[in-house]
Image 1 (tube, rainbow, N blue to C red):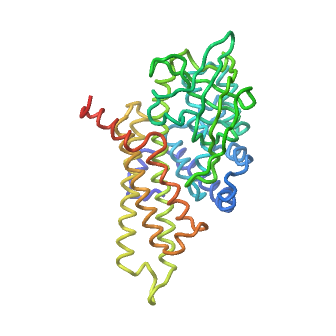
Image 2: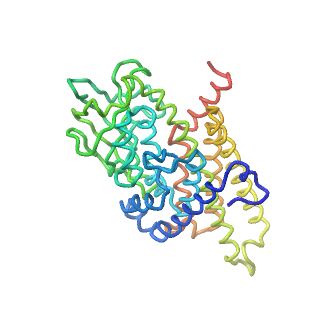
Image 3: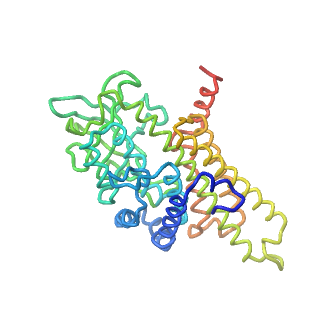
Length: 387
């Protein structure tokens, strides 16, 4: 993972290396042997959440007093890297859905809310999901139409959310809804619990990739949510979701370089074994150059991601750099996985082949957490190119 000539040692300490080793062993023993079956079934066992919590790898960036690991952004990224050695981005996405669902609770929640919602999730006893996207509102959160109206000691929610990771099995849904007509100041977060009257899973969605993570369309039909489940004051949701996007996009960038790293490893291993025309594929210059390009992309992507994560750790709020890192990771991962499929040939097109799965999985990286086009819009604004 970390070569002696690389700069990662300057950014990481022993806690990071130890944590990564634990995560990777967990992925190789608790995920990889079963991942094909889970992919075909469209979900992984709930017990995996509890196993991850017992291993000390669930919620590494959540403060220790709320059941997490108390780590930093690098612990969060190393979780992504390490779990990808389970050979499925879908398992990672589902197991790590708390990483996008719990930050609004940590940012806006009361002490009681943090104890009630964060601790059981970080301990693997409950599952959490984040619900922002709607059928007609994705990257542009100002278009959110799901509405909450206060009535007495409750809010009545009406609307729908879609493409929600872990949505079919989540116990807690952190939901962004509209509480006034103001496009930005009218957004508020609530925690909706499974079993609340008027809340239902409308549909379990089938996807191009991330098969092992359940993805849902959610419906709120006069759903009654207690005032105690509102996070922060009315209208406080927009800033919280923007803060959440920064860390989510950084993790998605880590998904990219982590997935590319696994695809490169699979390809390099394969070419040393596969023979054609009397020699191994590794002896063909065209393959050597393809692998060299893949290795360069992995290094460039990973280095950019680590530099950007270091800026986050130093509280520099690197909005432009995060958007650049996410976009570059999405493109680099696509190219590396595409080359890997080509190197494997016919086997690379088979569903039991790891690189076939990774090839499908990485396509979401230019869509989820804000599309590549939206990232470019933000980059342009940050650089003063547009108003």
